[in-house]
Length: 310
Image (cartoon, rainbow, N blue to C red):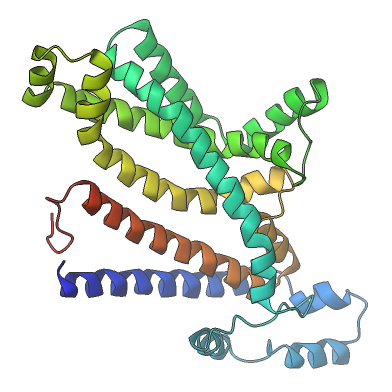
C-alpha cells in the first residue's frame, strides 16, 4: 500500500467529518427557537433567561461557540446536554447499541433477500422470475420508510398481533424496524447482484467451468459469484453507513431508542450539543465503514492496490 495515498484518504475523511459537523453546527443555530426558552418556558423572567444563557455559553458569538466545541473534541470531550446536564458521551453510549442492532438486523435481512433474488434474476434473465425480482427492486426503492413502517405496524402488530407496536423489548420488536429499514437496501443490492453476475456469466472462465461438466450451482457460486462479489461488497459497505443515517425515520416511527430518535428529540428540544454528538457519530460511521470497505475490497482481489488511482 502507498503510505501517501492512505494519508491522503484519511485526511480527506477527516476534512469531510469536520465540514459536516461545522455545517450542522451553524444550521442548527439558525433554526428558529431558543433552547433557553424551551427549558424555562415563555413565562420566565428575562434576567433568568440571560443568566441561564450565559451559564450555558450560548451568549458567546457563534464562531466562538464553534471554536470551543472543536477545542473540546480535541480532548475527546463532547460536552454536556443542555437539558439533562449529562455527559453527551454517556448519552450516546446508551443509545448507540440500539442503532447498531437495528442496522445489523436490517443488513442481514437485505443480504438474505437480495442475493438469492439477484442470482435468480441473472441466471433466468428475461423470465418471469427476473421480472418479478426487478419489480420487487423497483417497489422496495420506491416505498418510503415513513409509509412502510405504519403499514407493517397496522398489519403485523394491530391486526395479527405477532409483533410489538413499538419500543425495544426483544428480538420480536426488531423485526418490523429491520424490514422497514432493510427493504430499500435489499432492492438496491438485488439489482447490483444481478448486474454484476450478468457481466461475469459471459466470461471465458465460466464457459470453461461449464464445459468441464461442473454442476450449474458450483459454476455460479464457486466461479461466477466469486468474481462478482467486488461491486456488491463495495455497495454493502457504503449502504451500511447509509443505514445508520437512514435509521432516523425508522427509529422515530417505531419509537426505537437509538441515535436516530435521539437526534429528532434533541432537535425538538434545541439541545445543540447532543445534536452535534449524534451527527459526529454518524459521520464517523461513514468514514470507518468506507475505510473497512476498501480493505475488504483489496483482500478479496489482491490485484487491487489502494495506492493506485483508478
